[in-house]
Amino acid sequence: GQQLNQSPQSMFIQEGEDVSMNCTSSSIFNTWLWYKQDPGEGPVLLIALYKAGELTSNGRLTAQFGITRKDSFLNISASIPSDVGIYFCAGQQGGSEKLVFGKGMKLTVNP
Amino acid sequence: SQTIHQWPATLVQPVGSPLSLECTVEGTSNPNLYWYRQAAGRGLQLLFYSVGIGQISSEVPQNLSASRPQDRQFILSSKKLLLSDSGFYLCAWTSRRYSPLHFGNGTRLTVT
Image 1 (tube, rainbow over the protein chains, first blue to last red):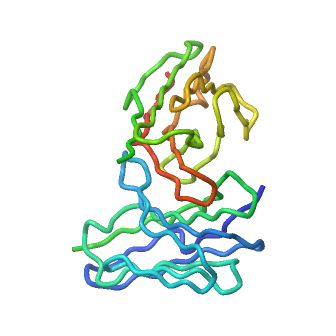
Image 2 (spheres, each protein chain N blue to C red; image 1 turned 120 degrees about the horizontal axis):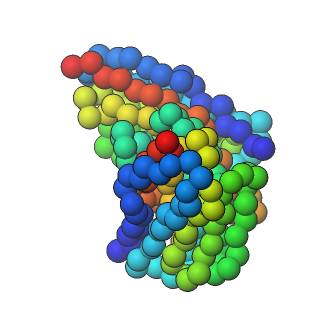
């Protein structure tokens, strides 16, 4: 089935550093979403992107819908300990009722 | 506002026993409903989804089944659990195509 290539798979950073992660695909997506999952909980939506080229911010988070519609990135600025968790990208293609998820990026923030 | 309820939060079951996990959504009508499984804290595997009452699409052939007896109720079942059924099961809903998916808090299933 369709796959999203999410990278990096994990990051270890110091508090205050910025983080960048991205997802790429060989196919076009109509929607790109970014989720964060805390241990033992369900993923929570961070940012939703609906238009190619769209750049959206949510506090310290910034995400962009790639102009080719085949990629997206998420940046976290000035990381804090509560940013720890697994970040997932997800995309939805035209005519599909399903989201395709990346494999996740595990973020560790050292105080 | 819409909320999703999923229970139980944790479950330990012996091999060969039946399974029933329930998910309900409040505050919306005719949602799309989804069951995912997550192994080892990584990777979300879509198991089933439903676009309406009695309509179930299966993504992965396996030991599980799903049913949607009511508009906002989605049930994941098994007649006989296998060790490989252990994992973190997540229910999710969306109000329409291209709108974000919203997840429940999950059920941690351990098959012993």
